[in-house]
Length: 541
Figure 1 (tube, rainbow, N blue to C red):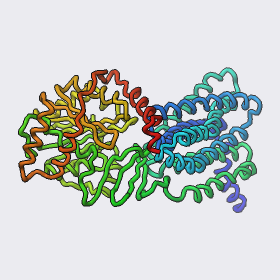
Figure 2: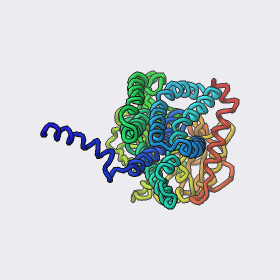
Figure 3: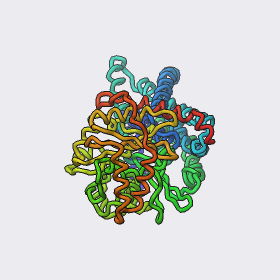
Figure 4: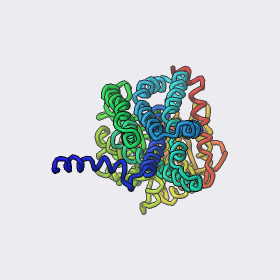
């Protein structure tokens, strides 16, 4: 009968889902294992971004995340093996995946208010609240990650029908799970987080896992079991709609926030000054005001670098500048004011920061050439010679180690003109200059002379390294000479006056960092911890 044939044919897709040789039990089981492996690593990568927006992405934070997630997976392997032996049923396996998907989706909904509280605690340096929040957030992952850990041993128990093939099946499942983990490593970082943000990345991972689990439930137990779990995506959809409204942080003056593949980015407006803050928000990476140009910070220090050379040095002798760590272009703007339309090559690894700079910080100088790439790679590829090379890519504890080594400073030396000067912005604690000393020692293994200047009212020390042997007296002589010229921009003279009054003795000789051995993490971790728990910190509260 035509009607019956039509009904029978309309059921073919669902029958194929259950009985097609191409979609037998083990085949779909492998799909589920692949998805669980992908979800596991995707959760780990997204967790680092979730916590990194407040606590940063130092190796201490990474170690805590990776270490605890491995513990949770270990617990899941143990539970999954015992559970599978006791109840080796597909319906239970897919129910576990569904609960794991639900738990993943709830992570950002529970974490968001805690992260807001943590951000406020970080701004006010309330260490007890901050530490407690970090512990609570890391523990939050115990449920989803432990449930995901049960997947592989459970799947092995379900897939093995012939003990003679136990080894090959186990190897196949672990290989498929690891391949899924490979995809999960890159999917959040390169696609989801830049596209939709960290919170919604968790929801997408949750939705994928729930979909796979629901199809598995239908195949193994029918629609009735699926309907018993249908409340899960409904709950997540409602919670996401109401809980993810508004900005991620309640920072005073925030006018813009976004996420890139590299950073959580905030733009703040306070009393007409625009500030760029990244990740945990400790430190201003760029600043802008439409009528004020002297912020008495590290950006203006770039301007005075050439004047450590033998006098007389005049602004017209500066013909090209490189800025490694452009951010939103404060230093480039100042340099264009003082030195005119000379070429400035700015290297910035994060394209979203460049977009933010152009939108909010008026980073639209026609003489600024922006290169969106790693600073060391970009400088190595450049054929230019520079009179000033500024390295402003350090922000303890986020210091790219490959920009701290002797080999890197040799590269900088090669790209400086005969009278060229390197200037590098180094962080320190109130009573801890070990990082300044180590970088000064490393630079001196390449350059003949260095000079150190502390920026007032900050934890920044500027190290100037000259390609020619120089003396501090040169700077003072050049300052006196420039004051007699009418064509010198006032910003340069104001900055030179500040620099002259804040010179420090030569850094102590310690260790030389190399590409083979750079103990930068030891120094930065100790520096940050000492600062956070120092008396100076307590007085700031």
